[in-house]
Every structure is written in C-alpha cells, then in structure tokens.
Image (cartoon, rainbow, N blue to C red):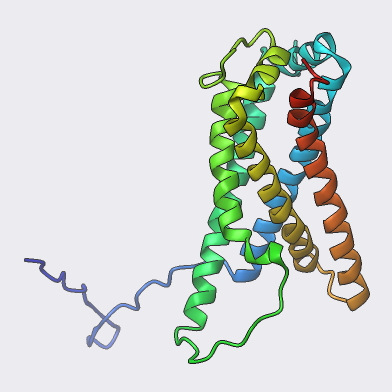
Length: 246
C-alpha cells in the first residue's frame, strides 16, 4: 500500500506554520524545441549530402571508391588516432538524431494536449503528402539507419562484409538475388526524401521565413533538394542492378 509522504512544513518569522512552495519544473518552450529540431535536422541533412557525394565515387571504380573509404578512416591523423574522427562524427550524428526525435515527440505530445477534445467533425486540412507522412517516414528512416550500420559499416549482415573492400561490399549488397535489400533501401530513401521535403520547408519557417514569397521559394528549394538527394542515393543500387557497377 502506498503511503503519502507528508510535505515538510516550516515556520515563518511570525512563528506560523507555512507550507513551502513546490518547485516548478523548468521545461523548454516549444519555440526552443522547434529550433533544436530544425538545427539538428540541418546537421543531418548536411551529412546526408556529403555522404551522397561520397557514395557517387563508386562510379569512378573500385580503386577510387576503396581509397575514399580508407581515407575517411584516416581523417585527422596524425593529430588524432585512426578512426577517431569517424567515431566523433558518429557520436555527433547520434546526438543529433536523438535530439531530433525527442523534440519531435515532445512537440507532438504538446500539440495533442493543447487540443484534448476531439472534434465531432474534423475539417479536411490542406497539406502536402510529405507533411502527412513525416511520422511513419521517420520510423522507416530510423530502422534503415540501424540496418545500414549493420550492413555497410560493421558488415554484420553484408554477404561480403570485408572492411578492406567497401566497393565489393556495396556490389554484393545490391545483387539481384538480394532484391529485398534493394527494395527496403528504395523505400527508405523515398521516405527520407518525403521527410526532407517537409523538413526543409518547416525549418525555413521556424528560422524566420514567413513571407508568402519566401514560403514559395522554400517549398521549391525543399522539393529540388529532396529530389537531388533521392536520385543521388538511388543511382547506386540502380547502377549495380543494371550492371554499370560490378
């Protein structure tokens, strides 16, 4: 049986018993959370584009691609030991992902609490498909990140799994007999595209882009940037399946 712990009482200067004022829990404002979500999202987007450029080196051949992969492991040397830069990057990206997911979850809960009573008839809200798929798209992306690490980072689920030959790992990963891996990759990248499409536009608004002309430009820029990212990432498995990369 639970026992209520009595609140300790103190006496004021006049000798009267006074109950201390309960401490207030300081919570970050919704604006602060939106800024954190936007900034963390921007960091993740920048990484995605840099990573995409690195992936496209596969079209230069196995020697160039393997050299690039080994170069990443030696970044920061001799100031830092080998692989330290990559681990620092991974930790920073993990913090950004956690911050992005956490702030999104808190903002979602706050939005629901702000409207606790459901409408008898909810009016149809005009919004993009990208906006309506942000939540499930985020789940797919999160699962893809885990699989991608196990596949091409640690080599645990990769049929080749040789850290000395990243080019061969990629080719083995998207082989025709592993069509289910390619399908999952395509779905994940398309989800990233939709997520990015709405995310870039939302970040632009959060960071001050509120005019009608500015919002139109932000929508156009978000669409173009998302399309470039999707095409860039999907070009690799398509090239492997078409025999352009083998």
